[in-house]
Image (tube, rainbow, N blue to C red; front, top):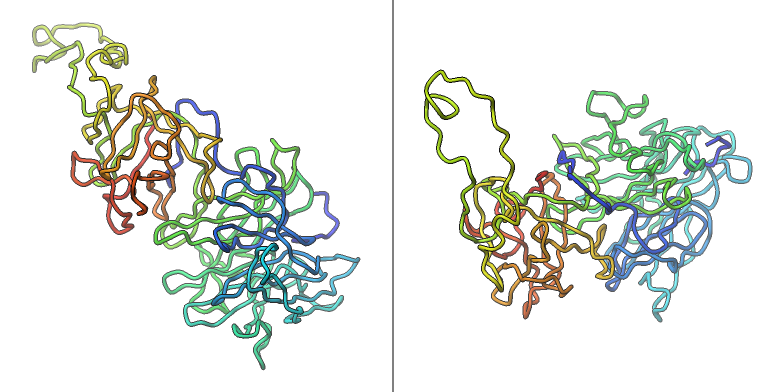
Length: 487
């Protein structure tokens, strides 16, 4: 966060028609400078500037209620062992008319304000800045590296971004550590680690001006947590470098304050705020996107749009379809000499319409119809309409969806035998609700909310070139991965 006085895919999903996107969360997701999302006892928490924050039962519907004492600005949070460490800035960023500020840390056993164990420790100062210093002690970001060392970045546009090392046992500054300059021209920084690199994500542009805010999230990387952090074209972030991760879009502007949430291997979510949601009066809102990786660099995934798609197996490229008899279209076989008729004959080309649902639905059996995978041929039994079900709740970053054959109410469903089928009518039962997560490689996993009589988390799975079932998710197997193609 900067409070200077300023006037303020990979798989892009195309749909022939759409009504809703899963991007900004629902409920009352109003927050500025959200911390990294933490899970505690089955609930999700994020803290914001000014104290307090948001709580969610499912990761999709957010409301106020999180408690963080101390006020101040731009907190971050991390879980270490069985405790939560929260860092925030008591001032800085021009608050109070100057750049004098401090970063402090404090612990809690739980984030649930209703728990008898809920009690924050006294804050410990870990960094500070003076009015005439070329740094501003605000916008703390926390990372526990793979070697167990704890790092904190801080700073704003008013000078350098700096990194310090903290003691993971106490949350205090490591004795003898020095502040190291690692970037300029950004703020709201944090680090993440992946495959031998430390990635420094910072927020570039202007904030705090509603729909005129230009915030965007950029990144550089280094083999060391102390830098140098270089972007994809070789620019040092100490010289203003930074590759774009997320900017404005979909009627929201001012993306800032990156946070990473690891769902499981291959499923990562990034949180941020958008300074202004045009559909919510220009208020600052929490947003959660899939995080993808392309050529070793993080990039925000796209919102998922409702619409009609073919659902394509990454394993072979075949389409998910009803197991019904193939109905031939008019047109028949053509001779080898041209478009019918004698060789060399001229004839105006004929436009062939796609097969219609009304042409074939009478040949489909009643009751449940099994699912298989086959060559995509623009047929009605291969077209699926995907629609959010608002009353069904959601998961981290999205609502549950119903998946039906286009033009019908015939719904994809999980069975007690750990298979997939379609039922004649969507009823809203848990086995007919589907979670759609974009994976770090840009493909998707499709998971039923509940498999009847089963406590395992299973996903839609291509067990062969023509057989679809349910099985455990495996990021290393294309059998677990799907794509959505414009019908």
